[in-house]
Length: 285
Ligand SMILES: [Fe+2]
Image (cartoon, rainbow, N blue to C red; front, top):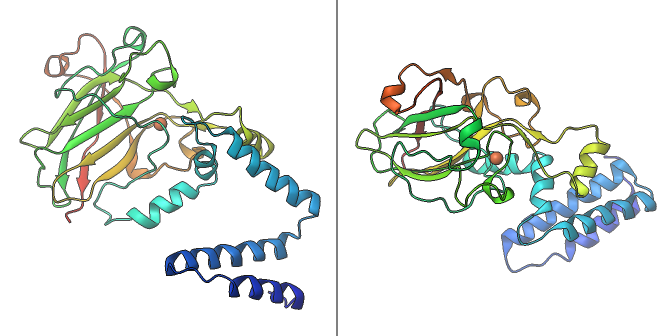
Protein backbone atom coordinates (compact mmCIF):
# COMPACT_ATOMS: atom_id res chain seq x y z
CA UNK A 1 0.00 0.00 0.00
CA UNK A 2 1.30 3.44 -0.90
CA UNK A 3 2.51 5.29 2.22
CA UNK A 4 0.21 8.13 3.19
CA UNK A 5 1.82 9.63 6.30
CA UNK A 6 -1.28 11.12 7.86
CA UNK A 7 -3.36 7.97 7.32
CA UNK A 8 -0.49 5.84 8.64
CA UNK A 9 -0.27 8.06 11.75
CA UNK A 10 -4.03 7.80 12.31
CA UNK A 11 -4.09 4.00 12.12
CA UNK A 12 -1.08 3.71 14.42
CA UNK A 13 -2.74 6.05 16.93
CA UNK A 14 -5.99 4.06 16.96
CA UNK A 15 -4.20 0.71 17.31
CA UNK A 16 -2.05 2.07 20.16
CA UNK A 17 -5.20 2.79 22.16
CA UNK A 18 -6.51 -0.78 21.93
CA UNK A 19 -5.52 -2.03 25.36
CA UNK A 20 -8.21 -4.57 26.22
CA UNK A 21 -7.46 -6.99 29.06
CA UNK A 22 -8.92 -9.75 26.89
CA UNK A 23 -6.19 -10.56 24.31
CA UNK A 24 -8.68 -12.11 21.86
CA UNK A 25 -10.85 -8.98 21.96
CA UNK A 26 -7.73 -6.87 21.31
CA UNK A 27 -6.76 -9.08 18.35
CA UNK A 28 -10.26 -8.87 16.83
CA UNK A 29 -10.54 -5.09 17.23
CA UNK A 30 -7.01 -4.45 15.91
CA UNK A 31 -7.70 -6.55 12.83
CA UNK A 32 -11.11 -4.98 12.21
CA UNK A 33 -9.69 -1.45 12.55
CA UNK A 34 -6.77 -2.28 10.23
CA UNK A 35 -9.06 -3.73 7.55
CA UNK A 36 -11.53 -0.83 7.80
CA UNK A 37 -8.77 1.77 7.45
CA UNK A 38 -7.45 -0.15 4.42
CA UNK A 39 -10.99 -0.08 3.00
CA UNK A 40 -11.14 3.72 3.36
CA UNK A 41 -7.73 4.06 1.68
CA UNK A 42 -8.79 1.88 -1.21
CA UNK A 43 -12.35 3.10 -1.79
CA UNK A 44 -11.80 6.74 -0.74
CA UNK A 45 -15.49 7.27 0.12
CA UNK A 46 -16.90 10.77 -0.01
CA UNK A 47 -18.32 12.03 3.29
CA UNK A 48 -21.79 11.64 1.82
CA UNK A 49 -21.09 8.01 0.88
CA UNK A 50 -19.70 7.28 4.35
CA UNK A 51 -22.79 8.71 6.06
CA UNK A 52 -24.98 6.72 3.69
CA UNK A 53 -23.16 3.56 4.75
CA UNK A 54 -23.65 4.39 8.43
CA UNK A 55 -27.33 5.12 7.79
CA UNK A 56 -27.67 1.69 6.17
CA UNK A 57 -26.34 0.11 9.37
CA UNK A 58 -28.69 2.23 11.51
CA UNK A 59 -31.66 1.12 9.41
CA UNK A 60 -30.48 -2.50 9.60
CA UNK A 61 -30.49 -2.27 13.41
CA UNK A 62 -33.90 -0.60 13.51
CA UNK A 63 -35.38 -3.40 11.37
CA UNK A 64 -34.45 -6.02 13.99
CA UNK A 65 -37.22 -7.30 16.28
CA UNK A 66 -37.30 -10.17 18.79
CA UNK A 67 -38.17 -12.48 15.88
CA UNK A 68 -36.24 -10.87 13.02
CA UNK A 69 -32.49 -10.27 12.88
CA UNK A 70 -31.61 -8.13 9.86
CA UNK A 71 -27.89 -8.24 10.75
CA UNK A 72 -27.85 -12.05 10.48
CA UNK A 73 -29.57 -11.68 7.12
CA UNK A 74 -26.91 -9.18 6.04
CA UNK A 75 -24.17 -11.58 7.16
CA UNK A 76 -25.86 -14.41 5.24
CA UNK A 77 -26.29 -12.36 2.07
CA UNK A 78 -22.60 -11.37 2.04
CA UNK A 79 -21.44 -14.99 2.45
CA UNK A 80 -19.97 -14.15 5.85
CA UNK A 81 -22.11 -16.61 7.82
CA UNK A 82 -20.93 -19.39 5.51
CA UNK A 83 -17.32 -18.22 5.87
CA UNK A 84 -17.57 -18.31 9.68
CA UNK A 85 -19.16 -21.77 9.43
CA UNK A 86 -16.31 -22.97 7.23
CA UNK A 87 -13.50 -21.76 9.51
CA UNK A 88 -15.17 -23.42 12.49
CA UNK A 89 -16.51 -26.68 11.09
CA UNK A 90 -14.33 -27.81 8.18
CA UNK A 91 -13.92 -31.57 8.59
CA UNK A 92 -12.43 -34.56 6.77
CA UNK A 93 -13.77 -35.08 3.22
CA UNK A 94 -15.71 -38.21 4.21
CA UNK A 95 -17.71 -36.35 6.88
CA UNK A 96 -21.03 -34.69 6.10
CA UNK A 97 -20.26 -31.00 5.51
CA UNK A 98 -21.89 -28.41 7.70
CA UNK A 99 -23.90 -25.49 6.41
CA UNK A 100 -25.45 -22.42 8.02
CA UNK A 101 -28.33 -22.89 10.48
CA UNK A 102 -30.44 -20.05 9.11
CA UNK A 103 -33.04 -18.13 11.09
CA UNK A 104 -35.91 -20.65 11.14
CA UNK A 105 -34.85 -23.25 13.68
CA UNK A 106 -37.14 -23.69 16.68
CA UNK A 107 -37.66 -26.57 19.11
CA UNK A 108 -39.18 -29.50 17.22
CA UNK A 109 -41.72 -32.00 18.55
CA UNK A 110 -40.27 -35.46 19.24
CA UNK A 111 -41.80 -37.83 16.69
CA UNK A 112 -41.47 -41.57 16.11
CA UNK A 113 -39.52 -42.90 13.13
CA UNK A 114 -41.72 -42.90 10.05
CA UNK A 115 -43.95 -40.07 11.32
CA UNK A 116 -45.79 -37.78 8.96
CA UNK A 117 -44.37 -34.34 9.74
CA UNK A 118 -46.64 -32.43 7.32
CA UNK A 119 -49.77 -31.76 9.38
CA UNK A 120 -50.95 -28.58 7.63
CA UNK A 121 -52.83 -27.85 4.40
CA UNK A 122 -49.71 -28.67 2.36
CA UNK A 123 -50.33 -32.37 3.01
CA UNK A 124 -53.26 -32.32 0.57
CA UNK A 125 -51.63 -30.36 -2.22
CA UNK A 126 -47.85 -30.98 -2.17
CA UNK A 127 -45.81 -33.90 -3.47
CA UNK A 128 -45.43 -36.56 -0.76
CA UNK A 129 -41.90 -37.63 -0.01
CA UNK A 130 -40.11 -40.11 2.22
CA UNK A 131 -36.83 -38.82 3.61
CA UNK A 132 -34.51 -41.52 4.90
CA UNK A 133 -30.90 -42.30 5.60
CA UNK A 134 -28.39 -43.68 7.99
CA UNK A 135 -26.27 -41.89 10.56
CA UNK A 136 -22.78 -43.40 10.82
CA UNK A 137 -19.28 -42.43 11.82
CA UNK A 138 -16.76 -41.68 9.08
CA UNK A 139 -15.85 -45.40 8.83
CA UNK A 140 -19.50 -46.30 8.15
CA UNK A 141 -20.30 -47.75 11.59
CA UNK A 142 -23.98 -47.06 12.33
CA UNK A 143 -24.78 -44.73 15.22
CA UNK A 144 -27.86 -45.93 17.12
CA UNK A 145 -29.70 -43.42 19.31
CA UNK A 146 -28.46 -40.37 17.35
CA UNK A 147 -30.88 -37.44 17.31
CA UNK A 148 -31.95 -35.98 13.97
CA UNK A 149 -33.58 -32.56 14.27
CA UNK A 150 -35.25 -31.60 10.97
CA UNK A 151 -37.06 -28.47 9.82
CA UNK A 152 -38.25 -27.39 6.40
CA UNK A 153 -40.53 -25.04 4.49
CA UNK A 154 -43.70 -26.22 2.75
CA UNK A 155 -44.41 -26.32 -0.99
CA UNK A 156 -45.10 -22.55 -0.92
CA UNK A 157 -41.74 -21.81 0.73
CA UNK A 158 -43.15 -20.99 4.19
CA UNK A 159 -42.08 -22.23 7.61
CA UNK A 160 -44.73 -22.80 10.29
CA UNK A 161 -43.51 -19.69 12.14
CA UNK A 162 -44.34 -17.53 9.09
CA UNK A 163 -47.69 -19.05 8.19
CA UNK A 164 -50.84 -18.98 10.33
CA UNK A 165 -52.34 -21.84 8.28
CA UNK A 166 -49.69 -24.27 9.54
CA UNK A 167 -49.98 -25.77 13.03
CA UNK A 168 -47.11 -25.12 15.47
CA UNK A 169 -44.27 -27.59 14.93
CA UNK A 170 -45.39 -28.35 11.40
CA UNK A 171 -42.67 -29.71 9.11
CA UNK A 172 -40.38 -30.15 12.10
CA UNK A 173 -39.35 -33.28 13.95
CA UNK A 174 -36.89 -34.57 16.49
CA UNK A 175 -36.18 -38.20 15.59
CA UNK A 176 -33.93 -40.83 17.14
CA UNK A 177 -32.09 -43.34 14.94
CA UNK A 178 -32.84 -47.05 15.32
CA UNK A 179 -30.35 -49.79 16.23
CA UNK A 180 -28.96 -49.67 12.68
CA UNK A 181 -28.46 -45.88 12.70
CA UNK A 182 -31.43 -45.38 10.39
CA UNK A 183 -33.91 -42.52 10.37
CA UNK A 184 -36.93 -41.95 8.17
CA UNK A 185 -39.99 -39.73 8.05
CA UNK A 186 -42.77 -38.79 5.64
CA UNK A 187 -43.11 -35.22 4.46
CA UNK A 188 -43.70 -33.12 1.34
CA UNK A 189 -41.30 -31.68 -1.21
CA UNK A 190 -40.26 -28.18 -0.05
CA UNK A 191 -40.08 -25.20 -2.38
CA UNK A 192 -37.41 -22.56 -2.88
CA UNK A 193 -38.21 -19.32 -1.06
CA UNK A 194 -37.11 -15.67 -0.89
CA UNK A 195 -35.39 -14.19 2.16
CA UNK A 196 -37.24 -11.15 3.59
CA UNK A 197 -36.91 -8.29 1.09
CA UNK A 198 -38.88 -5.52 2.84
CA UNK A 199 -35.90 -4.23 4.86
CA UNK A 200 -32.58 -2.54 4.09
CA UNK A 201 -30.90 -5.83 3.14
CA UNK A 202 -33.61 -6.47 0.54
CA UNK A 203 -32.95 -2.97 -0.78
CA UNK A 204 -29.23 -3.76 -1.01
CA UNK A 205 -29.89 -7.00 -2.93
CA UNK A 206 -32.09 -5.12 -5.36
CA UNK A 207 -29.51 -2.33 -5.81
CA UNK A 208 -26.87 -4.98 -6.53
CA UNK A 209 -29.04 -6.74 -9.11
CA UNK A 210 -29.27 -9.85 -6.93
CA UNK A 211 -32.29 -12.13 -6.43
CA UNK A 212 -33.31 -13.07 -2.87
CA UNK A 213 -34.00 -16.78 -3.47
CA UNK A 214 -32.78 -19.77 -1.51
CA UNK A 215 -32.95 -23.13 -3.32
CA UNK A 216 -35.35 -25.74 -1.86
CA UNK A 217 -33.84 -27.55 1.13
CA UNK A 218 -34.39 -29.46 4.34
CA UNK A 219 -32.41 -28.47 7.45
CA UNK A 220 -30.86 -31.17 9.63
CA UNK A 221 -29.00 -31.06 12.92
CA UNK A 222 -27.60 -34.46 13.86
CA UNK A 223 -26.04 -35.31 17.22
CA UNK A 224 -24.61 -38.57 18.57
CA UNK A 225 -22.70 -39.26 21.77
CA UNK A 226 -18.94 -39.11 21.28
CA UNK A 227 -19.23 -37.38 17.89
CA UNK A 228 -19.09 -33.82 16.63
CA UNK A 229 -22.65 -32.65 15.90
CA UNK A 230 -23.41 -31.31 12.44
CA UNK A 231 -25.88 -28.63 11.40
CA UNK A 232 -26.50 -28.68 7.69
CA UNK A 233 -29.02 -28.40 4.85
CA UNK A 234 -29.88 -30.96 2.18
CA UNK A 235 -30.78 -29.35 -1.13
CA UNK A 236 -33.16 -30.62 -3.81
CA UNK A 237 -31.31 -31.35 -7.07
CA UNK A 238 -32.67 -29.53 -10.11
CA UNK A 239 -33.67 -26.40 -8.20
CA UNK A 240 -33.07 -23.35 -10.42
CA UNK A 241 -31.37 -21.44 -7.58
CA UNK A 242 -28.76 -24.06 -6.61
CA UNK A 243 -26.00 -22.13 -8.38
CA UNK A 244 -26.98 -18.75 -6.97
CA UNK A 245 -28.20 -19.38 -3.40
CA UNK A 246 -28.66 -15.94 -1.84
CA UNK A 247 -27.01 -17.29 1.36
CA UNK A 248 -24.12 -19.12 -0.39
CA UNK A 249 -24.82 -22.29 1.63
CA UNK A 250 -24.86 -24.95 -1.12
CA UNK A 251 -22.14 -27.63 -1.20
CA UNK A 252 -22.06 -30.41 -3.81
CA UNK A 253 -22.20 -33.17 -1.17
CA UNK A 254 -25.44 -31.70 0.17
CA UNK A 255 -27.45 -31.90 -3.08
CA UNK A 256 -29.82 -34.88 -3.32
CA UNK A 257 -31.91 -36.03 -6.29
CA UNK A 258 -35.44 -37.03 -5.29
CA UNK A 259 -36.25 -40.31 -7.10
CA UNK A 260 -39.72 -41.59 -7.97
CA UNK A 261 -40.68 -43.89 -5.10
CA UNK A 262 -41.10 -47.61 -5.87
CA UNK A 263 -41.77 -49.14 -2.46
CA UNK A 264 -44.85 -47.39 -1.06
CA UNK A 265 -45.74 -50.35 1.14
CA UNK A 266 -42.41 -50.11 2.99
CA UNK A 267 -42.92 -46.42 3.80
CA UNK A 268 -46.74 -46.61 4.17
CA UNK A 269 -47.31 -44.20 1.30
CA UNK A 270 -50.17 -44.65 -1.18
CA UNK A 271 -49.89 -43.51 -4.78
CA UNK A 272 -46.91 -41.71 -6.26
CA UNK A 273 -44.27 -40.23 -3.97
CA UNK A 274 -40.64 -39.15 -4.01
CA UNK A 275 -37.77 -40.98 -2.34
CA UNK A 276 -35.16 -38.64 -0.83
CA UNK A 277 -32.16 -40.46 0.64
CA UNK A 278 -29.43 -38.77 2.64
CA UNK A 279 -26.83 -40.44 4.85
CA UNK A 280 -25.01 -38.49 7.55
CA UNK A 281 -21.41 -39.19 8.56
CA UNK A 282 -20.19 -37.69 11.83
CA UNK A 283 -16.63 -37.11 12.98
CA UNK A 284 -15.62 -39.02 16.12
CA UNK A 285 -14.46 -36.80 18.99
FE1 LIG B 1 -34.36 -22.75 5.31
